[in-house]
Structures are given as C-alpha cells and as structure tokens.
Image 1 (cartoon, rainbow, N blue to C red):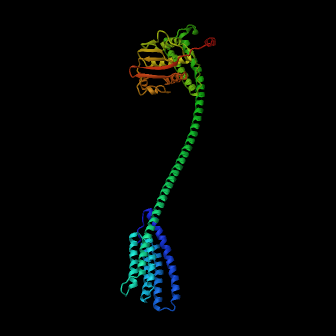
Image 2 (image 1 turned 180 degrees about the vertical axis):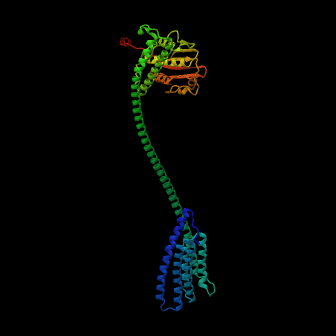
Image 3 (image 1 turned 90 degrees about the vertical axis):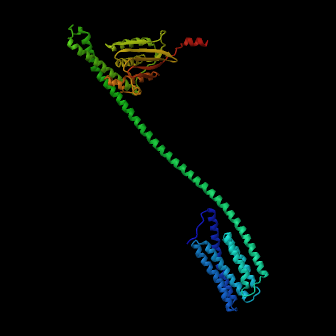
Length: 484
C-alpha cells in the first residue's frame, strides 16, 4: 500500500527534497560499498576466511539495502525506504565493529565513528520524532556491539563517538529546520507569484473575452446599421414612389371630380345655363348629394396628397407675419356652412384688445383651423363650437372647443396618427379618412408650434395648438437712429 502524500505545497516540496537526497545517498553508498568490497577482498587475501565473510556481509548489506531502497522509492514508499537504507548501514557497521572486537583488535572502537555519519543521514531524511529513534539505534550500537561477549565497558573512543553523534544530530536538526524554513518561505513566495500569475492570466482571458464580445457586438452593430441603411433607402424609395403615385392619382382623379362638381353645381345654381329650364324637384336632391359627395371626395384627395408631401418633405411652408383676425373671420364663415341644419352655435373667444401677429403660413394656419372646426362640427350634434385664442409669453395659444361626444382617454394618444380615429367616433358611424388631425399636427409642427387635445367622453373635446409670436421688424433707418 502506498504511503499517503502530503497535500500541503510546502510539505510536498520538503518531501521531494528528502526523496532526492535519499536517491543520491543510496546510489553513492552502493558504489562506495562495491569499491570497499573490492578493496577489502584485496587486503584480506592473507586474512582469515571469517574476516572475508564479514567484509562480504557488510558490503552486501549496503548494496542490497541500497537497491531495495531504490525499489521502495519507485513505489512511493519513502519512509520504508529510509529505514531499509539506514538499517542496512547500521547492520553493515555492526558486523565490522563486532568482527574487529571479536579478534580483540584495539582499533575496533574506531569503527564507531561511522555511526555519526549514519546519524547525520537519519536526521536529514526523517522528521524529528522518527529521526530520534534512528539516533537511539546508533547510540545503542556504539555502546553494545563492541562489548558483545565481554563485560560491558565504554571506552573513550565510544564516548567521543556518542558525543559526536549527539552533536551532529543537534546540528543536523537545526540545519534541516532552517533549510525547510527557507523552503517554506520560498514556496510561499512561489505560491503567491503563481496565484498572481493565475489572476493575471484570468484577467487577460477576461479582457480577451471582453474584446471578442465587443468585436462581435461591433460586427452585429455594423450589420444592423447596414440593414438599417438598406431599409431606410428602401423606405425612402418607397416613399418617393408613393408620393409620385399619389400625385399622379390626385391629378387623374381631380379632373373628373372637378367636372362632376362643376356640372352638378351649375345644374343646382345656374338654370340660365339650360335656357332657364327649372330642375325637377325629384332630381334636385340626388344632384345635391352628387355635389356634396364630390366635394367630400376632393377633400379626401387633397388630404392624402398633403400627407404624401409631408412624408416626402415637399410640403411648402412660407413663414411670414400673419394677422389672426382676418383668418378667424374667414374660417368661422366657412365653418358656418358646415353646420347646416344642426343646432350648433359657433362662438369666438379672443381678448378685447386683440391678438398679436404670429409667424406662420396664412394658408396653412387657415387649413389647420378649418380642419379642427370641421372635426368639432362633425362630432357635435348640438351645443357650441368655440374658436379661441390668447397670447402667452412668446407664443399665441389657440383652441377649438366643442360640446360633442368626446374622446376616451385611451384614444387620445392615437388621434393624431394617420388613418386613426377615436373609438367613440366609429361607434357613432362618423365618416372620415382619419387624416385631418394628422395633417394638422404636421402643419403646426412645420410652423414651430405644438398641438395637443383634452377631452372628457360624453362632454366634449378641446384641441389646443400654439404659434410663435412674430418678432418686430426693425428697419435700416431705425437701426441707424439707435446707433446714433
């Protein structure tokens, strides 16, 4: 069973150092043992067979222990490998010490000086608790083996060896602790650097992903802009075709309509054109309907043509100084003919001191007011329709108020759109193209004004719009007089 690996990076690093040390030591020990074996055999030619056996056992122990140590290291069994290597060294030195002591050689105790070297190896390769057992084994060999079969005595050489072993063990423990402290510091620095590098790499990857996303969005935006440009060009082309088509159609429709309106009006109002032959009453009502329907159809054609001109940006607006008094008089007179038999009273609400002149196109102002008056009369069965105005700051506020059916709150945002009418108007069966208010909004906007509506369903509506007050004109003579 393989030994458990440490999970701490610093412990792993220290363990790796120990493994590398042991791998070097067992190979070096095996080589030295082989050399020692050869030298021992050469020197022991004249020696006894017992001495040769002791040399062979000692060197064989070191060589065999070294190779077994390498085998255990390859299997990741470090602690067992250390103990096999250390015990093989202790066994080898014990054989040599015992052999010399058996022959009563006075120099046998000198072999004990190899024990401190083994103690050094133990303290460098094992943790302190395990290394202490290795040191005790070495001390026991130093004391016991030279005295085997004799009275236990401790010579000066043994005492020196013991003291040297303890000194080396203490120095090795201190030295090993400092080495691993340095390794721990180095590993901490390495871990910090690695973490910073990983963070930097992650940041770089995030920047790269952000760049790729931005590039993808830029490509999508570019494609969307291209599609938008193509759609805009197609819309402009379609608008031009629509405007041209409507212009041609209006021209083609106006010619027969003018003929229908002209002949029907002549038949109704100018019998002299027919040798003063009176129009039979049975025909008058039908011809009147033909005349009114023709005028209504002509108004629809004019509205559609105006809308096409607005879309194409070709609706002519001539801004000039305009007096509202004359426009009010003419529009109310025209609106009076639209009332017909309805019990509706047209009113006018302006300040007694009059109104200032406004900046606008007089024809378009009259068209806008007539559209609003006609709309109010259409949706009012009885009551009043009021045209009013008053100056406010740098503009004149104008309004058309009625007591008609009103507009629901959800329909108010829609009434100024093309081809849209309030639901209340449709329920009443009112005819209309839904272009009057849209054209009025465009006209007011082109004259730098604003338009909006307020209404209560069942009580009536009020349409407001503004026109800028005309600025006073300063003549060149007046300007020079002011300079003087």
